[in-house]
Length: 293
Ligand code: ADP
Image 1 (cartoon, helix red, strand yellow):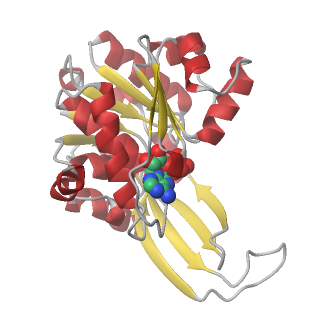
Image 2 (image 1 turned 90 degrees about the vertical axis):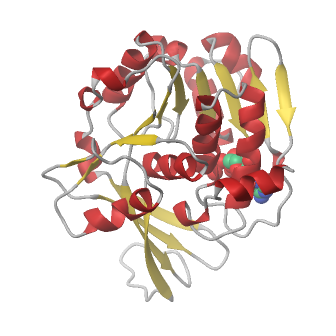
């Protein structure tokens, strides 16, 4: 099975007439809760595309836990390694104005308790895929990546949000996925330029830089390849990056090449932009296949 090591949150979405100023009390036009967290979103995207996914993560002991886990359960993700710890469930408060601008506050809560040691040795199987992001403690993410690599697994790191990891850890990653902001941050940090090719040259990992409606750049030992986005009329790009990573990993787990996996992930992430929300917008396998034809 594929392993997703990462965050689980409950998103609280508030549509506001304008973004809040200090001291201001605003009446929201609408509110909604939705399961979120980059780890959970990626696990759901992979499972919806047919992967057997085991989630390693944590929720709190409060009324938000079940709501945060709802999408994972619906998608059939194995939650037996997800722990309920003595903290609050991760919560993201997201204000969105008319123009789609947002104001986001994330309280990590239980995500701070996630440990690499929760991955059992007998689940680290050669050839399977480990997917990580940066919403749980960086030291634990690094430890999970090292253990997976030693066991002969393929490792995917989505450096979101951009947080520093030891260079040795970055270099051990098979596939690094960054968006344009994360690539710019990483390039400053490594004192190189922010192209996929420059990051690949420095790290040795295959680097996939996602460019929103402009698709992706992929740099590996053979070449740098540009793949265009799959054309759609986007209504909500929330979770598109997570959908890309989840479906990429699902395809790699089934034995696809990096380019094949990226083509599938481009289709899935574009379809994700045609529906509101993150997990609810992740396409089903048959929808991805239909669009690929
Ligand atoms: P993030 O959401 O993490 O900031 P991007 O904006 O780069 O990342 O989007 C991730 C992927 O989602 C893109 O590489 C692309 O495949 C897809 N995507 C995003 N926006 C669009 C769009 N308007 N049309 C088609 N695909 C899109």
